[in-house]
Length: 220
Image (cartoon, rainbow, N blue to C red; front, side, top):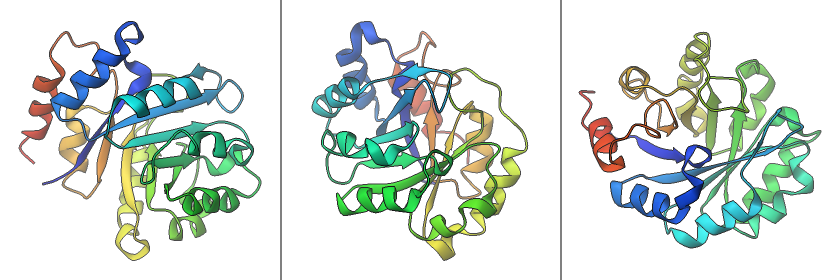
């Protein structure tokens, strides 16, 4: 069964960022996940426009940019200018008065439009946007920090989204506390990709290639 693996770069070693990107690319990672936090929408700051620009210039792999910022409509064009056509930009619907207008900017720029759903966000509140996005990033933890515990009720939300994905033509990605067990359970159900952070990929004192090969070889 095919599924995508994307590296959460807020967990990378910034003392050797170029080496991290190269090693992850050589290990077979599918894309790089860039978390942008403004200290307002979430109580943390993580990654900057310069980090995004540097990684975009260092790899030919796709970038998935996750905007955890207030009113992304005001700043999304800054990120668009530092990306390539076909890269993904996720916004949080709660962060914007008119999220569909922001998604339209992303679409018109040739980027892949996505929404990120917090654990406390109901499917009913984003139903209309499911018809215009290509990707849905489901947060299994509250956004803002790495290393959080999985919130079990999110699994029920993913099960409901899986019933809608073919009709509305979007892909589902898992973000937060992604373990081997979660990949084993949800890849067969139809989750299209997994964001890998400290739970499974970073800080393990093992080559990235070995870890990624082990994930690909899971008996799914």
